[in-house]
Length: 509
Ligand code: GLU
Image (tube, rainbow, N blue to C red; front, side, top):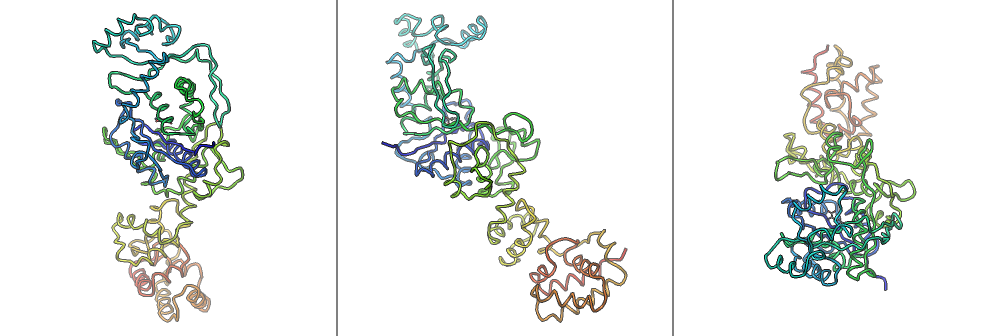
């Protein structure tokens, strides 16, 4: 019987979610939705040393911002809970016991100093079949001694007993079959009595089994752990229901080789985190995509194409299109270069797609930051203003530079333009223009324009000089959208007020 697809995103709350982790979550989500399956969020917090307060909430908030919906897990509940590994100690204790009882694992008492000494004595020391009998563990010590140490409350770990000389096959959906000889593996620690917690490996396998996970989709950095995981499924007798492995390609630096790091972002000026992160220890703030003005849809589209492509040149795809076209098996094996400029391009494109009304809402906080109260303008006015200039922006905050004149009359005038366009007789011509505008039967762009142009032609004025001088008084510089679209929106009163002010203040140079 075909099992229902169930995938999980299983981050460790050791800091802010990196953009590579976001892509992993997204691929899990796309695959789950495509197959009518479930997406779980499990928090792998068994490493208490690396626990960072706030990281879990950050992960939840990041997924919510991106629209990656969780069906089951931390913050959502579900029938396989708890979904935070630190709350599942009893379960791991039971499964550790099972491996011990079956002789698949053993107890080791070696102190950090003893391990250090072994490493110093043997080059490339590895705790495995070739060395374990020289160490202090339940295989090398007499049973009474083991009991005595346990009764005395001696600290111990439980190690997995790897049988040497076997071929272990990791069957990966992207990479195919990868074979590794078990002799290269060490007897990994599965459980530590000191904090009564399992290590990542045990908890991860037990939970994937109990939570009925069908596909483990995660970053390539976990591939080296996969042979051990295969052996663990086997040791528990779960091979038949073991999940399929899918190890996603690394995200690479935009320039040069190697894994994308936070430092690359700092160096080249782009965020590597979905949301702004405030480091609870140092107070340092790291930039986030959200705060940098990205639309979540754009980030999703951009990330989806880092490691997968639809096989043709489509680039702009809604999340629904991504869900239907995404193909896990055809993700690339080799790393995906993180092209930050492309990210900006996606944002630009998505900003063109959204409604002017939504863009206006996003622009309001930017207006406030610049000391302009959005309530002084109608929603329609703001929406039409941003609609006129949005073609020029990559980010919402860029709107300010292009649209500020709609909200604040110019106080200074571009000097170069003044020199070029504002001749001695320009104040007189602008006065005439006021007269022409005052008599206009309509302020509609298409109706006002021919009247003004006709007046310029009749008078034999220089079209470029007059129109640019007009623009200078209204905008403050010689750029911006079509002049008569601007004046249509601004209306006669404000337009004429600005021209008058220009006449008073601009001095020919
Ligand atoms: N806790 C691991 C992480 O932080 C999970 C790896 C996996 O998905 O198996 O990425």
